Image (cartoon, rainbow over all chains, first blue to last red; front, side):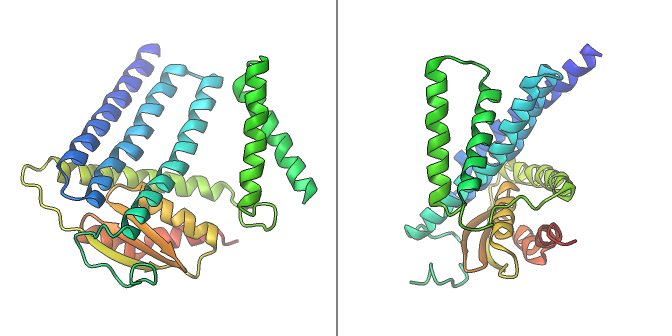
Length: 109
Length: 158
């Protein structure tokens, strides 16, 4: 049973590490800020979920697992909020996406 | 309003004591500081003046998270393929999704869910219009098709 849990957690941690790596590679290779953020969100979402799930399997049924679940929940609430703040700040600062932007009151001023 | 402030204060203190589990003067002091700071920030956000943030959700939210989790896995794999392809060809697309029929909290939930799935990124939410930057044209079409929006608005019903 312990072995099965360990194997499961190794798989999750490895996949999580790979996600973080891919996010990093993408953030370097992508051509502009917004595309880079897409790559980084692989790290943000997938990497965080897999790694925390993997650590939860290591922690077993304990208070630590509940704390980890809370960390994951709050991470998934806050990281998109931070991304939104970054993206709209970039847009307002005049960093144009490499695509046509539909007119909005804020971007057309 | 006083009642709601006190209720939140008690909840925050309990949460701190539970999570921390260490009862040293320094940590208790930090806890008191954090609780007061939270109360101040939340008050500035207008939390006590209206019911915007009331917890009205139920088990259906868990179902939504499950669906969102599957979407995150699917789109992560797609973005990973784009990132690792030797010839990096990216043709992003920006679209506006009308969401003024959703309540403000649901607009925030939808915007965050769009950002959370790799490949789509919420640029701006303004007067019920969500501006979405997508890495691929297919991703932009999927956002406009609106399955995620339907699922978010279904959380309210019933």
